[in-house]
Amino acid sequence: MEQLDTMRVFLQVAELGSFVRASESLGLPRATVSDAVQQLENRLGTRLLHRTTRRVQLTQDGQLFLQRSRDLLADFDELAALFQQQQAAVSGRLRVDMSSVIARNMVLPRLPDFLAAHPGLQLELSSTDRRVDLVREGFDCVVRVGEVRDASLICRPLGCFELVNCASPAYLAAHGTPQTLDDLLTQRLVHYLPQLGGKPDGFEYLDAAGQRCLVAVAGQLVVNSADAYLAACLAGMGIIQLPRMAVAAQLAAGQLREVLPQWQAAPMPVSLLYANRRHQPRRVQLFMNWLDEVIRPHLLPAAGA
Image (cartoon, rainbow, N blue to C red; front, side, top):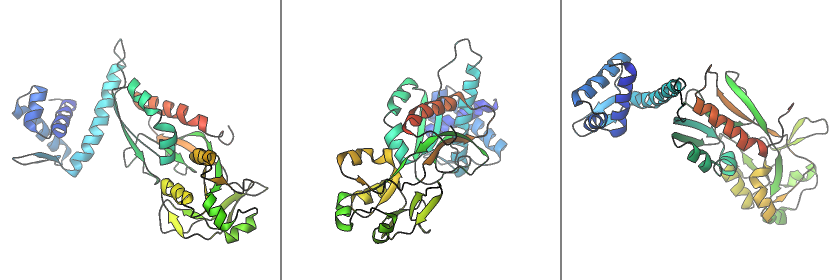
């Protein structure tokens, strides 16, 4: 049996959790299915499945091989379609990561239409504030907010978030509305750190020369998620600095008020990152182009654009 065929057999066994059901689904004798998986394990030099009389379960190596083989077979099917007279629709799995702010406010509202137009796609959307390892964790692309320091990845700049300083009416009633940077000495921040345990930066602003400056400001709370950051501000726990589009609704409704508008932090770059491959699968190219169209209109132009 050819190697791609054995991979397809393994996928069917893994997804159905049974050699019997896989053989019935594939129309192959059970012994052929069992031999194919055994040949694959021998070729790889590792056990992919735990077999018992009651069930079949993936090993840790089997879980990793399952994810990668799905992508490989989808890429092969897509490549084969290039040589057919009528190219097949895109299909396969996509794994992407982006911040919860971008997912909630930009991508998810538009996603149903995209997936309806491409029913063969299966999307795994990670929405986290930590910086994932694109290659090691098997992501096809990530939308990253902030400076990009990994030169091994391809970076497509999308634009920049305009940042705004804001606080709740209840907080301002209790602590007063700051008018100058000196007023921050009697104010409080909600501090944000992607990884807890570090030292918060403080209040960030650009001076007249365009240089990034920081003012140390007290604060009783440090959070590590954008949702908690906003919720803490709404609860009256201090001033926050975050993208204007993330709080546009709250500002319009009067739930938050802008403060110190003359002392804004530097616009925060937003980029689309992907691995340095010679040929990206068509489904990945399609999705990245769609992300670009969805996200870019919400951003300020990138520096130098």
